[in-house]
Image (cartoon, rainbow, N blue to C red; front, side, top):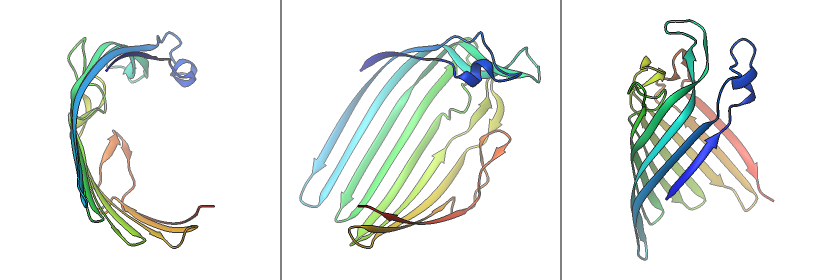
Length: 212
């Protein structure tokens, strides 16, 4: 595949009081990807494996940056050039109601003008999902793994890697009603998606749904 694209600045990027930047240009990009996939299926066993290499180049990428080096005032700014390339691998297998899905990404995302890493883009990340269907009951557990990255441009505000486990359950009471429950961040991990902004610890949810 090969494609081009653009992204216009948002209203807030342009005109938010005190920190908007009316001189922003739209982001533009061009990129390509190539992949290979294999699928297998028998009476009870199904599975698949795929791998994709991607390469994207960006111009005028919009990101938060200080007005001048060392300034405490940050505004949305256009990064001169950036490049994002890497490899994505995924696999799945299911047998008699049980299934396993996994994916892993290796990413090199850099500001081409100074070779620093683009903000909030980990070099490595992945997920492992394990589930089983037992009659009307579905159970799932998901492990998310995110590598170290920087929260701000120019390799500023280092964020440590983390892993997080979520559990989910769904019970089909009948054709209309469904009960759901889940626990996010089972291990009550402390981590940040953005520097200075914490995330919820262990959280429990329960719900009731209906389909007519």
